[in-house]
Length: 364
Image (cartoon, rainbow, N blue to C red; front, side, top):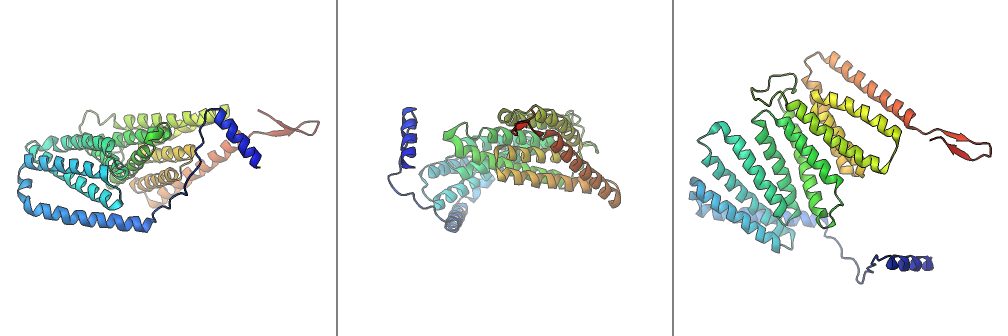
């Protein structure tokens, strides 16, 4: 066994693959409850510090320029603290300072654009979206990157909701999630950054779906607004969903080149897109769940299942019919899906025959 290991090491070295033998034992990771206590200590220290600062600069909130200047200064201070942070206490202290600075920036923007209330939310949404995108790229903290990605998705939803294009925001976030997780290992140096962005956008997608289901009607069953883009919103959302689903298919087909699988996938995708015209969350949940299966990511699979259940549950309560008809509708849809699954498994399974010499003959 030792000789085989040595031979493998020699062959890897000859191939130009360096082997780094550990010279010291691996360091033990800090337990999660200790890190949670350190995070709590950081937030507690940040609250006392911000409270002390607020007592002396109450006049800042009365001046948009002062609020903007102090907010940018606090974000810069948080950036410098992140660069030097070596513990969870300092990291969460910097995060709290950065959030306070972002609130001051948002307050300054609201005060500046208060004179034009019609476009206030759109301008505020686009401004915060740009700010969060910049912070997600430059902040040297995985926690802050994830939070900024989450806040950017909500700001995008707020900006597009003013023009009746809220469904497009979820489609754009879904496409960004698909691109990030499919290219998770493409940039080894930014591996943790990509994960932070992916988790933040995933949480943002779930929150956007919850906001869409909290009281609004289905896109094709109500008069949304008089916006010129209102009629195109469902189609744009389905187009983004189709693009994300196509990227997942291409990633899977590169590893499993089965002609039967391709012929089965595209009709199922077409049926899913038709359903997504009426219930967008169903298609988004299926895409996230398929993406999780494609890359072997359990968190994505769980988030896709949660999104799918949220979409189906909302659709159940949105149907303007009796409870009996709703139950029968879901029963028929579930039966058809189970029948489709059984038919696909029967069609995609490769028959195995035995030849005359007793060996197995696989029929391609």
